[in-house]
Length: 247
Ligand code: NDP
Image (tube, rainbow, N blue to C red; front, side):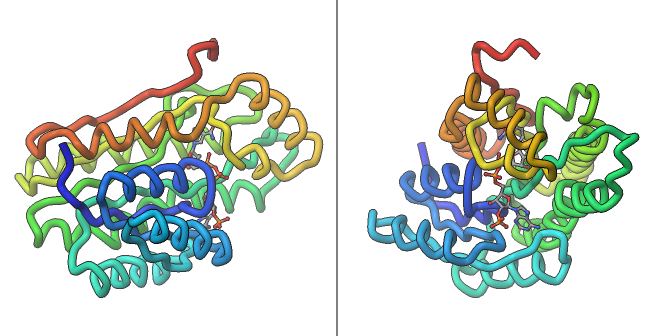
C-alpha cells in the first residue's frame, strides 16, 4: 500500500539516505534529497528521474539551522507539502576520551544531535498546521549501548532516542497526527567507517564492516515499512542489524 508522499531525506548523497531515496522514489514518492556534496546529489536525482521517479535536491549542511529552514522551504516551493522528514545525516568519529579530540566531539554533536533538532525545527510547525506528518530519526545500536571509543557517538545517538520518544509523546498528547520513528541500525555497508578521523581508525573499522555489514537497502526497506503503515499506526523504533552481528 502506498500513497505518493513528499519525503525529505538528509544525508541522501550516500549510504542509507541514498538507498532510501532510491527505494521511496521507486515506490512513487516525491523525494527532496539533502546533503553537502552536490555532484553526488545531482547524479542520484538524475538517475531517479531517468527511472521515471520525481526528485529534487537541496545542498544542505544539517549543522546550520538556516540551511535546514531553506531545505524545508525548497520542499514546500516544489511540492507544496512535506509528509515525511528523515533526519539521517550523520558521522562517526570514534575516539577514546583521553585522545582529547575536541574538534571531533563538536562535529559529532553538531551533525548527529543538533542536526536532528534543526530538522525537527524546520518541519514540525508545518506538519502541525497540516495535521499530519512523519518524522524519522536515525539512531543506532549506539542509541542503546556504548563501549570504548564510542562515548561521544553514543551520547548523540542516545540523545536521538530521547528526542524521538519525547517528540512522539508530545505529538500524541497534542493529537497532531504526527508519527515519530527511530531507526537503530547495526553494521550497514556505507561510507560511515570513512568518517573516523584517523587512518588507523578508518582501516580497522572498514575491515570490521567488510566482514559483517549488510546492504543499506535493508535499512531503506525498514524505513519504507514504517512509512507505508496505515496513518493510525506508528512504528516507533526499528532495530535492524546483520544476522551474524553479536553486539
Ligand atoms: P554515509 O557516510 O554513507 O552517509 C552519511 C551521509 O550524511 C552522507 O550523505 C553525508 O553527505 C551526510 N552528511 C554528513 N555530514 C553532513 C552535514 N553536515 N550536513 C548534511 N549532510 C551531512 O553513512 P550512513 O549512510 O551509514 O549514515 C547515515 C546515518 O546512519 C548516520 O546518522 C549514521 O550514524 C547512521 N547509522 C549508520 C550505521 C552504519 O553501520 N552504517 C549504523 C547505525 C547508524 P555529504 O558528505 O554529502 O554532506
